[in-house]
Length: 108
Image (cartoon, rainbow, N blue to C red):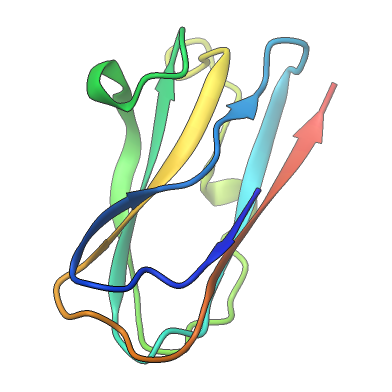
């Protein structure tokens, strides 16, 4: 779904995940960046970050966090289901090395 090195400080958006035919799912997020970052799951009825809604609270990822987030960072209840999902990655300091990898796990 996403595998990239955010370069300068800022907010980056993963590819949109199409969940129109799914019941629920979760995301595994692995950061090997040399800087901490904040991730936020967002959802929308269209693939548009400007009108997307935050789902759950933002989560901090420490430097080199290689812990999958699992089902506690996902969707599937009536109040947070959207047909499209993405994850924003925000860095306060531009990382030099490392990647953020996001994998979607879905149940249809």
